[in-house]
Image 1: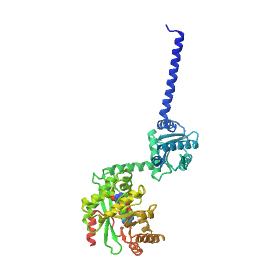
Image 2: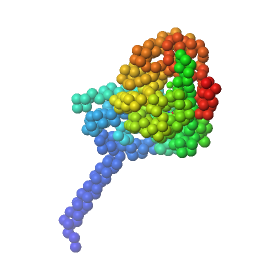
Image 3: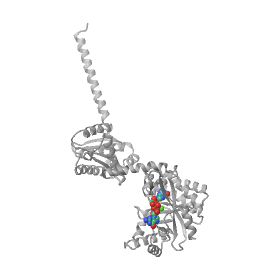
Image 4: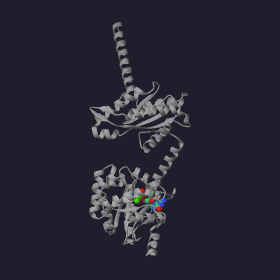
Length: 449
Ligand code: C2E
Ligand code: CA
Ligand code: CA
């Protein structure tokens, strides 16, 4: 038989256990819905909150915030500084957001924000504030850190959504668009973004099969000596006829191939094919376009050399066309690769001259043989008064450095004459020939002789 005292202590123990249990449960619940580092709600909490808003009647909008350059900070200053920065960003945002806003940390450097409005102006104004707050420097451990934010915004009023996943996807598409547009900006979702993305995905999926399915082809466009009008070389330009999408322009698919990394295998195919084809015209060089992505990271000198040896083509008969973007990520690496290629005897052309950020920097710092003046300057000849002086200055610069100059996109005889007078060494454009397949190129060359 139990005593009263015994009963009391059992009851007390029980109560204590229940209390402990509910405390640890509360802690577990808190941990499940909060971010360990900042104490802010986490992704699970964000999705729960979003689902409530989606099913409720109150207005809402959703913003996804991605910090720009955070990875750089982490890599340069270490994770401790990165962690502190994330906490500081969280505090700063909490300080400026309206009381009814819901801020969560979704992953490393991504935040989610739910606002109690679906008016475009109000939501965009808050996003602008967030962006400015992120863009004004942070002091962490004596370092001034400069980051920024890209924001994708979805307004509840744009509706028509099935669930939280759909909602997040739309905001994510807008975020992707903000990043692609150059970061540090707010982009609002609209349906055309979604259509664009679908098309991109289709192109990417098609491209991944383009090499094995034999859908790629190289066309060649002659590069003409401006003095003798002899054919100096041919530029290889890639063509893709997709089984599903039809003919797709390289201006569309090359950037997608670059972003997806597919450019490596495609570029490899281009190099091998161009080196193979150019054996048909032993008196001319072949110019091969290389994109930045191909250039960085891989040992391009080794790859080109290997393929040229396999094809039995002397290095002197191969020109590489690169744009300045190849130099941005790893300027020293790029300079070394170009140097190695040039020592071997490959020609180096700087493509699209004048359209980048720092053409003069590139000319000064990288070993080059040729500058290709972008078509947009040639288009201006005889139309815009600045065109001729700019072209003339570029030609003088090139001559002073001992470089050749190719004018791109020459379409009329007036342009040809003007460029010849200005001292341009080589010409390329529809005036002479459009890019054509290998068989037509050979026929064209034969007829010209
Ligand atoms: P790009 O290297 O600047 O090539 C010149 C572009 O101008 C080509 O467009 C060519 O067809 C076009 N073009 C040449 N002359 C004229 C003209 O007189 N008038 C007009 N309106 N256009 C002219 P395309 O073939 O569409 O290529 C576009 C871009 O795609 C190229 O610009 C290049 O950046 C890229 N690309 C093409 N093939 C390859 C490749 O194999 N690898 C890489 N990485 N990029 C490539
Ligand atoms: Ca080119
Ligand atoms: Ca070009």
